[in-house]
Image (cartoon, rainbow, N blue to C red; front, top):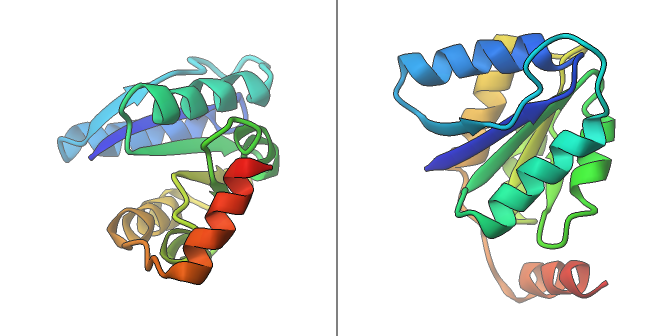
Length: 144
């Protein structure tokens, strides 16, 4: 599994903690920034992550800002991205199971490293259920 990760300044500390965890567990990842706690626009990093998932062979994207809301809204503007702001186990699971989400977003003001790791593990390990109704809905998202 290849992961691309990005954040704004408010998500930077959680991004760095996840990267440390990735290095310790030999996860294949790419960090697209930001690289400090200096103020930046979350939409720039959402675009970088979204483009990497759609065009560069990354399986899953991770985006982090203060609330998780801004990065999820910005990522969903990238054609082919289905991003979710996961705030609990169920959201991480159902985003994959029913919506085949490919980007998980975190709000660093609301979740800690342990929750982020747990939500990510659920997200990565949940298979898309498929089925006519879910596929039809995803196709409508892609065609809008």
